[in-house]
Image (cartoon, rainbow, N blue to C red; front, top):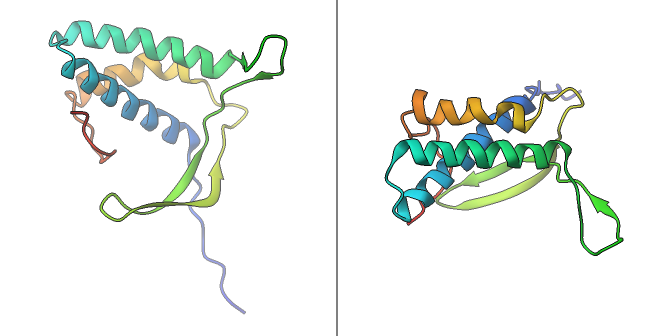
Length: 132
C-alpha cells in the first residue's frame, strides 16, 4: 500500500498577513511612482487604505445591481505551481478563511508597520514584478 504523504497544515492567518504585506508593497511602489516621496505620507495612506479595505473584506458586502443579491468579498488562496520565470498554474487546493480569523482590518496597521519599519520597505520574499 502506498504511504500517504504528510501534508503540512497551511496557516491562513500567515497567508492573509503576508498577502496584506504584498498589497502594501505594491501600493507603496505605485505611490512612489506617482511622486509621493515622503515616507510618512505613504505610510499614512497605506494605513488608512488597508484598514478601510480590511473592514470591507471582514464586514462588507456589495450588490451588482440595485435591489439585487448581496455579495461579500472573501479572499482565499490556492497553491501555485511553477515559477515567476515559467508562469504559474493553480491547483484545486484552496485555503479558505477560518471562522476564527481575527480579520484583515485587525492586521492592517501591524502589516503596514512590518513593511515600513521591520522590513524597511523591502519584502523578505518574492512577490512578483515591480511597478514601473
